[in-house]
Length: 257
Image 1 (cartoon, rainbow, N blue to C red):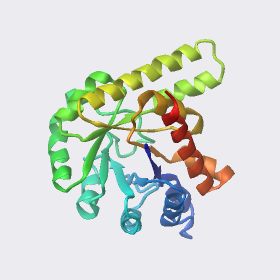
Image 2 (cartoon, rainbow, N blue to C red):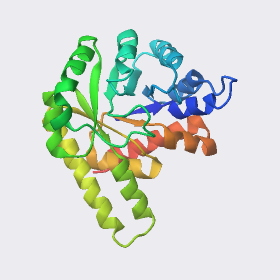
Image 3 (cartoon, one colour):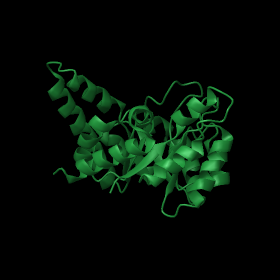
């Protein structure tokens, strides 16, 4: 089954708007795990706009008490990611080509340009026992290159798919064809990654309506990392109920032929 890894960044963002320490990141991490999530994700940016250094270590301690639960730390390996990996030894690091002040992740690695500088980083992480995932655009030709630089898996950057799905829901005339075209590209990229020996993860702007079709088209997907939409849905239905709803959407996608 596809793992749901709950990204806790938006919980931290709300916490940081005051000085009261609420909502507590680890409290909501525990709620997510109790509700059935099989992993937690943090993306500690250098400006500490959401996840802060102490969160990285506190979530690591929470996960130590939960056998079978995975810890995924995302970030730019040329900023602050490696220092956390050396101290925490998460199960997985997802390497993302973010600039320090970037609003949010908005593209994957260009391995024609970035391979040489990524190779030593990936080698160090793997020597630490950390699985390495590369944040990648849905470009089938790039997947073999991801394997060649030493990655264990890729995370498909799903914002273009999410945008196409939203367009489809708006009943635009060409939307149905557009979403089929985009989904086909993601499915081809997932297949190319598996043929290169890589696991396939996915993340960015995934939500309950668009998650099921993506899982069905790209399965098997090892993990989806979801934070923003899940946290927004939790404002309506509660955090545990939102986790349940996302797991149900995953399971529905896995049942589709």
